[in-house]
Length: 471
Ligand code: HEM
Ligand code: HEM
Image (cartoon, rainbow, N blue to C red; front, side):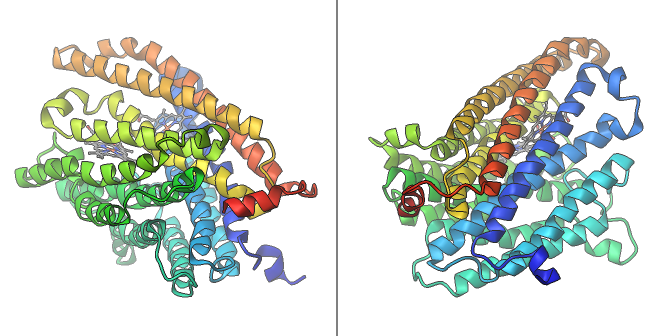
């Protein structure tokens, strides 16, 4: 066997399998780091004495690992399966390129583990990775995007189902958003990867919100559009409406970044645009939700029996709550109370874990049996994971939201900051407990995914046929 064969594979869906496994493992690592960071807010003196473990170093590591290393990686694994399926071809244009790309992608997250705790950072939120790692991100996203687009170009199915729109859009935007947001051309000129002063903040939040809006959201929506109508065995409500949602998402999301800076000295017209567009975001959100929920009427039983679909459905409910909360907290009167508080952290977890993460997990459980040609190792574990994570996230969201309201009210009432810190202890403990539940759920997922992938047991009679028919 040649070296190339050892490190890569051209078997159909090898790329999907690799990304799903990697994402599941990075989820555990990222959540563990989040748990450590949360413990520092409960008992700072107990682990924070080691410089590499201080909150300021753990936090960016956690955020990068969970948002891109876990959620986005799993969504890429899902996309690497459903794109060829929807194109009616066997596997990606080049599975070998896909599996080689995965090495580069995983090198990024190993690199993050080896740099961020040592203080090697570019210091801009969501853009902390050092330049060398940015280059690897750019190479790997360019490669997987080219692979997916070539698959679509060689398709045997003339109709482009809406999932393909969202996935192709999400991938193409990822390259643009990442390179532009990280200002990647400046280090090439020997300058720091930042602009000056408030302009950099405006730029950074154009980037930050597009990480969630143009990278994670379209990939998650594309997966949900595939999983739920398929589970309900009913088509989406309106194909035209789904495409309107797609284009409005692109137009509106690109203008909302400044809603993170309503308390900062940025031009008023920019703030006004960001607020109006934040409210307008309800249009693409509702097109997605109505399109996906309406076909489920009278077919709820499908969710009961299909744990993957159940995760995805829960993800759409979290999406609804996130996007109800989002426009609300874009209003200056509300943000006066919530900005800089734990409320925003609650929103972030609801959005990235609840919406994008739950959809990623559910879609992974849906495609895994077809990728591996055997049922998932344990349906029971997946069910258990569902309930543990559902309860864990609900508890985390409620604890952080309440903590945020307490903080915000105290500050508005001129309470000294140091006097509000002890008020937070109980909520910080609740956040750590709920975080432990989420971490446990992700460990169960990793175990389940690894056992499914590594199992050598012959597939049970008819199991694959059922999976194929379902596909
Ligand atoms: C695996 C799923 C998870 C995802 C997708 C996720 C996502 C995020 C995101 C996006 C942020 C940035 C929040 C902001 O800037 O407003 C964040 C911060 C944080 N997360 Fe997570 N998280 C996950 C799991 C966890 C777990 C299990 C814990 C454990 C308690 C945790 C604890 C934290 C802490 C302590 C912060 C820093 C909050 C702060 O700056 O005050 N996360 N997480
Ligand atoms: C209608 C849709 C949405 C609107 C209008 C919205 C609005 C906002 C606003 C105004 C903030 C900043 C709050 C503050 O700093 O005071 C925020 C933060 C955040 N949002 Fe959203 N949001 C929406 C949907 C989403 C979605 C779908 C995701 C993820 C997929 C997401 C992820 C985040 C994250 C991670 C943060 C924390 C950023 C940070 O400070 O580190 N949001 N959102």
